Image 1 (spheres, protein in one colour):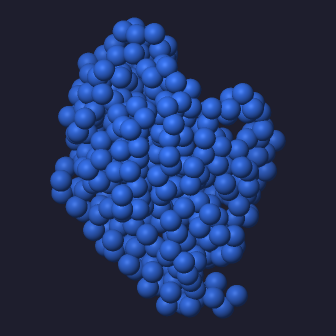
Image 2 (cartoon, protein in one colour):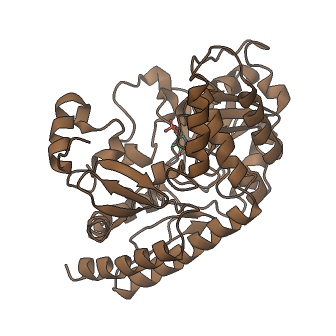
Image 3 (cartoon, helix red, strand yellow):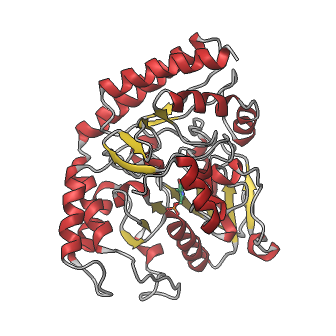
Length: 423
Ligand SMILES: *Cc1c(COP(=O)(O)O)cnc(C)c1O
C-alpha cells in the first residue's frame, strides 16, 4: 500500500496507464469521478486504499462466485504456486478441470482451456469457421464476447459505456463477415452462416433474459441451414445452474465458451463442444489455437476449488439471495418514486432505471440514456454499496452475500434512491 488517496492514485495511474485503468469500464468514465482503488477484499466486501468498506456486487464481473478470498481458493492457489506456476507441459489438474466441466454441462464432450473469455470466444469462432468451411458470424446487439476484432460490433458492456458502436482499429475486412441482429428476435439465416453466437442470458447490456422461444428458435434456425450454435456462457456458466444455460433452458448448443467462474478469480477461459466439432482443433485437425499459459496451474487449482463448492445447495442459496436482492431493490427504488426494472435469472440480477421492461439493446440504451444510473451509483457508493460503474453491467451477488449484507444493501438502496429522487 502507498498510503495515497484514490484521487492521488488515479492521477498517478493516468501518467503511466491509458486512462489510469487496465480495462475501460473500471475508469468511472460513464458515471463520473475517480475510481476507488481496492486495497483488499474478503467475502462480500472490498476495502479501498482510504479504508472505506463496500458491499461489492462487482465481484470481478462475476468471476468471484464464492466471494473474495475464499479460504479454499486461497489455499489451493498457495499450494499450487509452491509447486511451480507454469511448465509448458500438461498437468493432472488440467484433466480434472476439463472433466469437471464436461461432467456438469450436458452435451459438452471436449474442452480446451485458455486464459480469458476473449480468447475463448475468438478461438471458438475460428473453430466454427474452420469446421463448417463458412465465413459469416451472427451476433446480437448488446451481447459482449470479449474484444477480438470480429466480435466487438455493438458489444454492450464497456463498449457501450464508452459510447462506442465498435472500435477504431478494427478493419472493414475484420467485420465484413460479422452480422449483428437484435437480441430476442430469431434471425433468418442463410447457408453462409458458420456460427450464431449468443449470451443465453444477456448480461452485458444490463441483464436481459431470453424471451420464450428465442433460444429454441436459434437452435432450429441453425439446424435448418447447417450453422453451429455457440453459447457464450462466460458469465452464465456454473452461475445460473450447475450445468449452465442448457440445464435452465433445455436448449443445447454445439459450442460453448466459459470464463470468469471457472478460474476462481484467476485468468482463465475455456471453449468446448461436441466431439466431432472440437476434433477440428490442432493437434487433431487443421484449426490452430495455442497458449503458453493455457491451463495454468494456479488457475486450474482455483477453478477446481470453486467448482467443488458449487453443489446444489450453493445454487439454491445464490438464487434465493438474488431473488431477495431483486425484490428488495425494486421496493426500495420504486418506493422513492424512481422508475425501475430489476430483472433476475437465477443468481443474476440487473438494474434498469426505467418504467419499461427491457428486452433488447435499444431498450437498454434508452434506460441508460436517462442518466439516473450514474446518480444512483454514486449515492449507493457513498453509502457503502458498490455496483458496477456502468449502466450496462449486471450485479453479481456471491455465496458470501448473506442476510446481513442484503439488509445493509437494501437499507442503503432506500436511502440512496430517496436522495436521488430529492435531486
Ligand atoms: C467477460 C466476458 C467475456 C470476455 O472475457 P474476458 O475474460 O474479459 O476476456 C466474453 N463473453 C462474455 C459473455 C463476458 O461476460
